[in-house]
Each structure stands twice: as structure tokens, then as C-alpha cells.
Image (cartoon, rainbow over all chains, first blue to last red; front, side):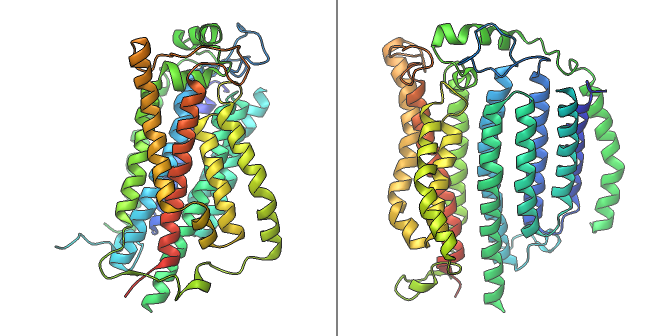
Length: 115
Length: 82
Length: 250
């Protein structure tokens, strides 16, 4: 059971985040649900790289050669988290401008731009 | 360790659901902060302290601030156009 | 399409998508049995070869430094896009600072908040600098430390007022800092190209592992990335704050 649980949690987070995006009635809520979907990818990456009984890949106080988890997936996730925040900021700025232009942040009220 | 990982995984699933079902953006900003902490706990249990540090810093500081500022601008613009 | 139609379509199609996803996950190794060769090799050779005890930072800034450069430029481009999106539209104007002096903040912060702010700015700044500079030794690095440094500036705003934050971090200086950080990182790469023959190869002496001035060019790259990330986040928040506090409609 434990061997499949992290992947199941990642799949659940993707599904529930997508549900939030599809049924959202507020652009700001939609952007935060997108970040939930992104967090599912971090859970998936770290679950793939985990080794049972492994330590963190920091060798300042443990000798080189002890079993450690995979460092490459951690490097990918770490940078990705910071970049995700910036992209979320860009999407929120688009939501603010959409409100200025259309007067509402309901995705159903947005019309195609004219002219 | 296995028990801890299972418990935190379930907490992450519940936290993600809570973020999606907090429809009001103001409430969602607070829930996202808590969700960030639970995710950081998961990353620590998965032996990834760098990623946990990054997640705490972003999901409890950067994202709620930006949500609140976007909401402030939207609300103030609504008040102005009334 | 109405909300009901969207929800119905979603609930019909998500099981199919999840089925495909689960079939893909079934091909992954069992949880806890990852046997990737690259990670195992890096864990064994990173400390002797690079004198960096934090293998994750060594991967980010040496073994895969080119990818980190790409990610850094995603950050740069996103901030640029945000500045373009939030530029004042034609019919808006910036409130002159003399006419809205007392309104450049949301509400008068309580004295407890001001006291905490004053007490916290120093330690948070020091913690941010510590995490940026010790990236190669303990968990940390430029990305995390940069956001902490930006948060120190945010505390100035929260405990004081917007004009105080603008005084401490003027717009031109922050822009310059962000660009300098991005450019500095690429310069480290070019230094590797010029002095050691390979882009991003280490070209200064490696010290003892677990001492602060070790791991060659990694502390320099960390510093450049820290400055860039701090500048990027301060710019983001200043743009939003400008929108919320300064720019007014017609």
C-alpha cells in the first residue's frame, strides 16, 4: 500500500486542482488552484527519487558513501518552486488587468477583446 | 518513518482539497499558507531539506502577499467605479 | 458553456485521464526503490570533486548550471511581463505624492506591528545573507535566500509605509540589482569558458569542504542568483503595491 500512496496523492492533487480550475467563478481562485496542480508535480518528483532508509544528500556531517536520496530531482523541484511563484504573480497581474477592462473577475464574464 | 510519511501524505491530500474548496480568495490565501507548511513537512519527511526551505519561503510569504495585493487592487477599483 | 456543462464534461473525462495516468505510474519503480545511476554517482563524487557538501546546490550550480541559467531567465522574463502588463493604462494617472501623502498605506499599522517590524528586519536580513552564502555547505542557496532578503524589505513596508520601502529600495536600484544578478551569473559561466575552456566550469581554487570559502565558483553563483531573486520579488511586490496604492483611474 505504501508503495503506491505517494503517486496516488500526486494524481489526486492533479485531479482536484483541475476540478478547481474548471469550476471556478473567480480568476484569483483559479490561479491558486493552478499552483495546487504544480505542487502535485513536486510530490511526484520527490516520491520518485526517494530511497528507503536514505538520508538527505548533505554530507557536512555524515560520511560520503552513506545511502542518500537522489539529489537531481531535488535540484529540479527547488528551482521550480521559486519560478512557479513568479508565474503565479504574472497570472494575478493578468487577472487585475482583466478586472480593469471588463469590470468583473468571473471567467464567464470575460469577452473576447474587441479592437 | 513509514507511519509518519503515510500520515503526512494524507494531510497533503486533505490540504490540497481544502485549498480548492476555499472559494473566497481571502480565505484561500490563509489556507494556502497552511498548505505550504504541510507540503514542507512532507518534503522534510522525504529527506529533502532544500526543497522544504524553498516551499516554506514561497508558499507562506510570496503567494499570500500577491493574492492579498491583487485583491486590494480589485476591491479598490470596484469601490471607485461605484 | 455553462458551469453545469463544464462540470459534467469534466467529471466524464477525468476518469479516462486518471486511468491513463495510473497506467503510466504503474511503470515507475516502487516507492523507495529508485535506482537511478546519475544520482548515486553524484552522491559519491560531488564532495571529493567539487568540495561542496550540499550535493543539491552542487547539482544546481555546477553539474546542471546551464539549466539554472535558463530557469533564472524564466524568472526574469516573468517579472518583465508583469511590469509590461501592469503599466499604467492611458486613462490612469499616478497620484502625485504630495496630494496623497497620508494615503500611501492601507491603514495605520498598530504599534505592536511597528515594534515587531523594527525588531525583525535585522535578523531576517542576516538570516537571508547566511542562507545565500552557505548554499554550498548546508541546505540553502541563492533561490531561498533571495526570497528571504526580499521578505526583509517587505517587513519595512508592513511596519512602516510604502514611501519608507521606496526610500530603502528605490526602483532604479532594484532594477539594476536584478539585471546585475542575472548578468553576473552568465558572467560566471563565461569566466569558466575563458579560463577553463568549458562554459560554467570551475576556475577558481576549491577550498576545504564545509568551510565557507570553498567549492570554487558556487558561492559567487549563489550570490548572483540571490541578488537577482531578491530584486525580482521586490519588483513584483512594488508593482502590485503601485497598482493598489498609487495608480488611480480617471
